[in-house]
Length: 444
Image (cartoon, rainbow, N blue to C red; front, side, top):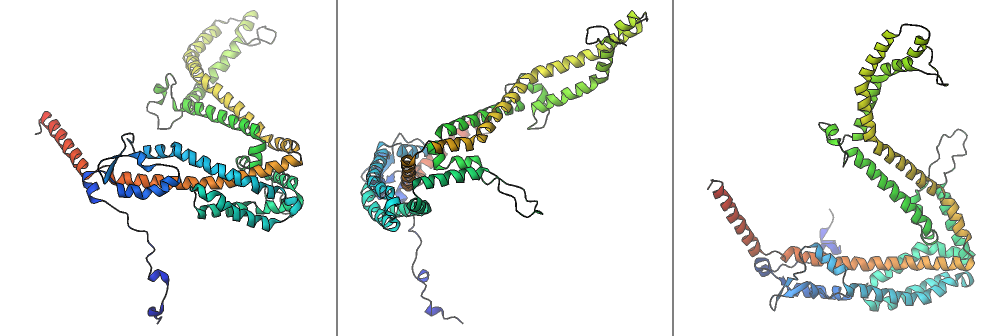
């Protein structure tokens, strides 16, 4: 049997669970937010440039109430994220980052000549924390995590730069993007029936930094075309649901939920055409004319010209017209209702064709974007993208800390916004209203 007395696993002896959430009984009973708990949030709030007491108003020496401007829980997030101090602190962070980057980019720009990749890594890591930590909105662990993650993200690209220069890296991006839209080659085995498959979607390619930086106009065109497709699709769906279509209620009355008005109309039109088929064919025979405008053989006018007694056929034509009239009227009414829908379908077809054409032009536009760049422009593009990548990581770290501050404030709201005394008062008011209603209805 294992000797339990000899187990020195730290988890058996150290409690690693977070401390219990504090609760002020007096605040729960009588209302107010303990200033002690508000002060506990001040360091994290001040690190983001936010005065946490902006959200409160004094009740007494030990308690505060939420400010009158905070009518809903969601107002907390809006007030924090829209605060000028939060924005100013972010601007400080970006300024400090740009000051650091102005030096860091020189080492990156010189990589093709120096080829000193690991010394550069050490220099960037060593200088990043001292440059950004004084701003305070991101702690040292997040700072080091941001730059270490950034270096890991681009390390293979940096090797390409060190060995072959910036244009080689840009060419690699372009070739990767181009080949990603092409089909994979089928297996060389003649007996293979493996179908070609597309590697990635165009939407994924559009997220590539080269595309975002150098093909912005194309991306905007594509986005506008996609929006147009979605807009027309919404119009189509609105018609199919009967929204704002005159007479739709009569057709959809009694139909299953989700039934398409357009399908009902089209199905009924098919039925009417089927009912009209034989009579329409016979009528065509009785009044048929040739391409030259002469009466065709077998028509009433042709038989009359041949001296045939056509009274029987005239009566037959009148009877056919009588049977066709309500069917034609119904079909015409349906056609009139469907006319806007048919136009919408044509618009959707054209919008989709436009979108397909733009997507098909991706490779052509990609090549044109690369042709515009000389060697210096390639270097500046790569450096701009690397700056953007690192700043995005830094910004995500800052946003997480602002989000944590909001979450802590929402926790105070959930705990203390409504006191037990207030709940009891609301319950008493509701009971009194109920008693009044019951007396008015004669039940009390």
